[in-house]
Amino acid sequence: MKNIEKYIPIALAVLNDDQLCIVKNKMIDKTYNGYISSFGASIISSGLLPTFIFYSKKAENHNEADRSLILKALEKMLKNNEIAILQYDENILQKAITHYSNTRFKQKIQECAIALKLAIRTYPHPKEKND
Image: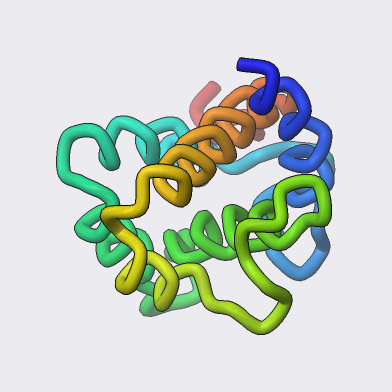
């Protein structure tokens, strides 16, 4: 639990990263909210590698949310000096393919996923057009 508390500020910084565009206009899209919220449960129910494969799919059109941004956010967290599970030039999907059974790697991913999930709770959701 101590790690998760330390990782929340890192998660907030990653969510605000302009390259990822998960947070726009200080709000988080409900689709990304759902992706982040269900990521940890997916690891528990399906396993690390199937979850990573599912989340590695890029958006096919401009109107669709890009699931792969969740993996990019986790990758940025894991490259942060505070966590440092990934080297600067390592890819999270490639590391998952070779280290999916590594308990420490899986634990760090789960801790980062929980920190992201908690961090998204600080952002409002955009209003629906029918609200």
